[in-house]
Length: 499
Ligand SMILES: Cc1cc2nc3c(=O)[nH]c(=O)nc-3n(C[C@H](O)[C@H](O)[C@H](O)COP(=O)(O)OP(=O)(O)OC[C@H]3O[C@@H](n4cnc5c(N)ncnc54)[C@H](O)[C@@H]3O)c2cc1C
Image (cartoon, rainbow, N blue to C red; front, side):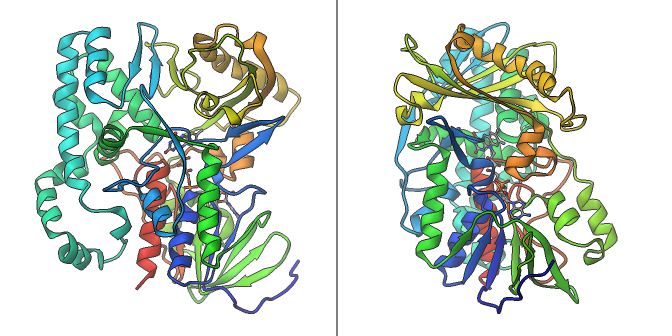
């Protein structure tokens, strides 16, 4: 059903308002481009959107952040974009950044590395703390070399070479000796410095939180950057939750003339003679633009938004065969807070040390953001988000859906009980999400966390596509799933389009 054929008021149409789409949109609008974002959902932000039920303001995804406020140097790609468009965030700083609950021991994880090493020495032994110190030193030397080249200067084409040589020559020289590590996995570094099995498991968990993969699959620069930044500036939670970040990005974008359309699901990207011409929305409306940027996942873009004949068959097949990290089970809980005076905000529970941390249900992440921002919950209440990996396959809205959902959520309740033993008696709101919920509200292929492209085994495909005028941003374009990486993907794409 075709409704209208609009004239061509947009230079660029972006499909999706995830952090990847929004950062690209901000830079492009700031540089004078006429940019339209079409977002399928009623709420912007994608995996980072916030939603409200019965007065509880939940995060749907991220809650671990650092470097959200301007400082010199300001290294978080997201904050670099916000700075440019004159937006800022209020944050709450905290340390320890979380408690990790293993069957053998519970230990606090500090941003402050001396305290982190002390916690390892106390919980394990001084030898393990020394191993960690050597591991950390190696990764921080990589961070020190990387941090002098700001993400805001990067691009995804050959012009990166003159840009770096002209503006960052000393930093490039400093980076040269680190090059072997740039393509390595954290596992390779861990194998060299860390023997203690518990410590190796701890590092695996830290990697898993970042990339959805253990140390052997996580790229060293991503981990080095996380470790370096959280040591330098500490961990922060945005006042207002992750939705506050999205609101700031939307404000920045609209300030420079950008337009965000919500409930605007894109059904098709039009391609003529290998050139993008525009898009069609689900309501039949056709919008033209010479450049389209897709923030939808690689699988959604190439499977659903393009026709098979739009792409070279071998390229399409290879792209669609990209492995995906599993989806999630979620709990979003509202609870009575009476007596929970010393509650802390982040916890990771590993139920069984004999099973891999990536086994669905084994590693559970818990965030209680009302500890940092009481306004996220009604007075005398807290809100909790707990999640764990869960495969998408096999989930159907059939007669067993409700009971299966309850059974599968049990591992999450048990994890939360390690932190709040009587949590079930405190419940006032109890929402269980399955991979179907995740796929539906985050509009992501099979509700995946992102591509499982292990370090040392594959390359992320960048913002380019074989179609002239069609680009991609988001977690299936640049290495490292997570907010800094997807913000960097938006920057890389926008800078590449700058010419
Ligand atoms: C449970 C969970 C916890 C996480 N925790 C952290 C954390 O603590 N720290 C951290 O840094 N990262 C974390 N992450 C990762 C981080 O949130 C994501 O990597 C990031 O937000 C992904 O952004 P994106 O731009 O790639 O894509 P998305 O957020 O997926 O955005 C894509 C957007 O495109 C829209 N869209 C898709 N198809 C269409 C269409 N056809 N038409 C119109 N719109 C469309 C979607 O609705 C969505 O808004 C977490 C993720 C999850 C799921």
